Every structure is written in structure tokens, then in C-alpha cells.
Length: 363
Image (cartoon, rainbow, N blue to C red):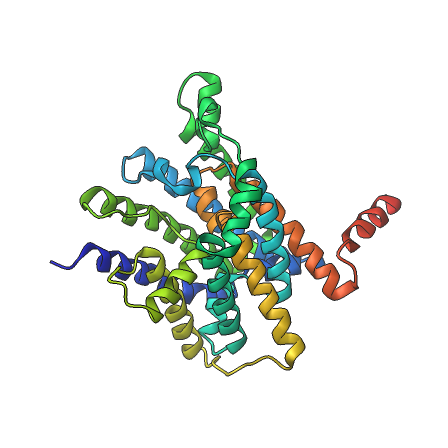
């Protein structure tokens, strides 16, 4: 019988291939979604991302209620809540995302089409993530950020459902998830232009369901094997670093679900690009662009570890388990991205303040 480690990796590769294919086909990218929302008044890509998050939320919580997943053991819900890391890491990740033009997930999708800038980003991101988790910047995290974490055990834990259930005296986790999920889906589908965009609609639904499937797969193997299995659904920071280690070292440690997911996203994006005749080699134009991508990769890899996730990890996977860290990290990422875009496009990271003042003056 095949070792459970390889089964997990192959399962992740299969799920990742599906995600990578639909993401490349529909141009699913959180950075592009934010940029189009802010600068082009087009919120269809943002609604596609929200659709993935709310689909994952509803599907995951229904599966949890049925006993098919063990989300309470997810590292997004393990104590304590890294509040300082969520804010500082989110800002770093968002700024790096703006400098690069995409996140780790988007870089994998771009690499599938032959973008060598994405290879530079992924290499830098993966190495920075390893350093933040196990190396020199990890010491900075432990000294400055970890002491500012908050222990929520006494009030129910890091799940919004557990917190509210503790406050009212009975379990309303599923009820809360359905209310939040349905309200989110109502906002997503109230846009007629988004309802007409079948490609983005399908991508959001498929990616959300794939995240839920990740919880099922890792929960199943955690319960049916003696080997330690990390419960995960989708993140593209530390798994990128783990993939690099798997490529360059032979330690006897088998690849896990996250490594399989990373490889699968690349393969799925490559298949999609090939089928669409959209494969072409791209590289940095000059040293200035290369340095900007390296800096952005470092900020994303370091910030992603500090914040325990990225736009997919915190923005979709953590949302699906109703982790209180998810909105904190995503607001921080959005703020960092907005400052980064302001710096690149308008010469100041605080251009959004002037925009708000101008809007208030008009109203």
C-alpha cells in the first residue's frame, strides 16, 4: 500500500492542478482584483475572490458539522492569536504583493505560462519564508512579535463561531457560518455584471470547493495514519519553501499536501496556458525591476510567515474556519497593497489619504 505521505502529496497535486487550471483560465488574482477595484472601478475580480472565500466557508462548515473534517485542529485556530504578526506581517505581505504585482499563488499561476519573473519571486519568497520560520528573521519574530500574541482560550478560542457560542451559551457555529456565507454570496451575486461573467463565477466556486476538499483530505489522513499530518487546505508561503527543500535536499521526509498543492497549481496553470496558446518566456527588463521583485518576494515570504498565511491562506482557508485572524490579516494586506500601489503609481504610499479627503470634499 502506498505511503500516506505520497497519497497526501498526490492528492494535493490533483487539487492544485484543478485550482491552477481555473485560476489561469479566469485570471484569478487577488492583487489584480484589488488594483482593478481601486483604479478601474471593476469589482468583478474581487467578487470572484469573495465567492471562493464564502463558498469555502459554507462547504467547510457543513462538512465539519457532518464530522468529515476536524477544523478545530487547524493551525489557524491554535493559540495564541499572533495579533502583532497578523498586522505587521499583513502589511509586509501587501506591500510586497504590490511591488511584485501578484502574490505567491499568482506567481505560481504566472510561472505556469513561462514567466521567469515569477520564478525569481517564488525562489525569494520560499527562502524568506524558511528564514522567517526557522532562520535569522525567525529570531526577530520570536523576540518582537510573538510576545504580543493574545491567548483567547478563556473566551472560546480563535474561531468566531466558538467565541460567539461561548458568549450565548450554546453552539451556534454552523448558524453563524451560514448567515455570514449567505450574506457574502448575496453581495457577490447582486452584481449583474458579475453574474454575466461565467468564467470568474466558475473559478470562484471551484476554488472555494477545492479549499474545502483540502480540509477533508488532510483530516481523513490525520485520523487514519500514525504519521503526523498537518491539517491544511491551501496556502502559498511556507509550502513554497517546503517545496524548495524537497527539490534541493534528500532528508527522507516525504512531501506533504501543501507541497503537492504548490506543484499542482503550477501544472494546472501550465496546462491551461498551453491549451490557450498563452505560453511565452518573460523576464525582468532591467536590474531595477529585478531588485523590486526580490524585495517584494522577501516581504511576502517574511510577512506571510509572520501573519500565518497569504491571500489564499488567510483570505480563503482561514475564512473557511472562521478564524478571527482572517479579517485582521486581510485588512492589513489590503492596506499594504494600497500603500505599495500608491508608491509605485503616484509617488507616495499615502496617496489614498488624499483620495479619501477629495471624496469627502465632493460629498
